[in-house]
Amino acid sequence: MVKKIIGTITTRIIIAMITLVTILINGWYLGAEKVGTISLIILAITLIQMLNNFIGGSALVYLTPRADLIKLFIPSYIWSFITSFSGALILELFHRIPQGFFWHVVVLSLILSLSSVNFMILMGQEKIRAYNFITLLQVMSFFIVLLFWLFILDQREVISYVIGLYVSYALSFVAGLAIVLTKVKWGSIKGTLTVLKEIFRYGSVMQTGNVLQFFNYRLSFYFIEIFMGRAAVGIYAVGVQLSESIWLVSRSIHMVQYARISNEKDMHYASRLTLNLSKISFIITLICLVVLYLLLNLFFPLFFKPEFAAIKLIMATLSLGILTFSVSIILSPFFSGIGKPGYNTISAAIGLIFTLVFGLILIPRYGFIGAGLSATISYSIATLYQFISFGRISRIRPEDFLLTKRDISGIISGVKEHFNRTNGEN
Image (cartoon, rainbow, N blue to C red; front, side):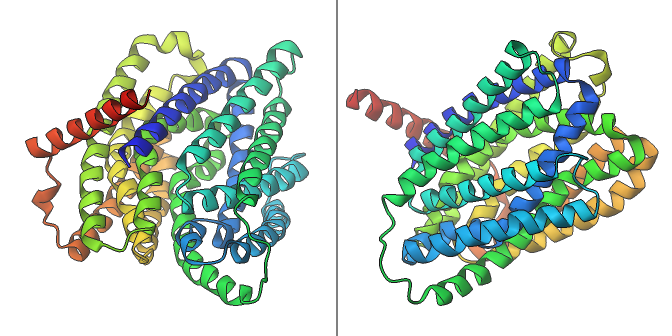
């Protein structure tokens, strides 16, 4: 498992570096307003993805080891076609898609939804290396296409970013499908309806939590557009992206952890694993926060135009929430992996209530500071609920979350063992 986590973190670091360069390029060559438009397009695609994941999402990870793959594969693909158009239509009716980008959102959402089904199946089979490879392929291909359109063709418009999404999403879909199809046994689909009911029963609880959590992440974008304008969305989006990039370690651990716990029946093992990983996540996130903020203060004029000056303030107000939520990211797969995703849903609902209340109070009055503070309050309260719930289920005491010398020795030993094994194989 250590090998999978280290491999995933390495991949995520490369992706984070490419993403950071992309953010900087967008800021310099597209400007705040166009970045704001891109952010709203991505937001629309992600909202549709949330709808798709009621059947084609994380429930597949849990059910892949427990059901015939063909009975998961077919209904998930059909659902992707349904949600991509219907979801985009609903957003268009509420004017949540930037003008002129409706059909782009429909097609991109479809490709991404189908890719997501492939990814979830790969995770359910614990094919972490394949997942990492395809994710890296997606990000690198997007980056190359974006550079080509911006600098070779000199097309410094939103459509250049959109074309990059088309190419990267399509490549990741084809690569994922090629691997998944080798594992699909084209036999009888009898009993698919029963499996579909199970997907929806489990997925609806889990995905409701994901949808609520997504709004915790991004509802502020809509508030900022209403109260501060499209350019402000672009500035805040860059600040949020930089802050959330620190979660790369937590999310890497989360992915491997969820796949492991979903295939594990020992509750004690799942509890101790989650406890140890939450400590690692917290410490690494804290270090990354300090380093990133110092670098940003030292080199900000080199990275961003003056119109993005508020980024430092945004990141400062988000920092405590980012740190706290790094623990939530590790607690969530514990609940999902043991078949109790309802705890994550309740946590997300609590967080969303605080986002709504404090977002509407603080953003109109304090702008970016209000948005960052409302997010921090939401993340902290939601994590506190999960923390208490985890303690009750696992019977782990709050003091057990403290990092000890034994924990540090265990972490170092695990990393050394991985590298020794790797060197031996080479």
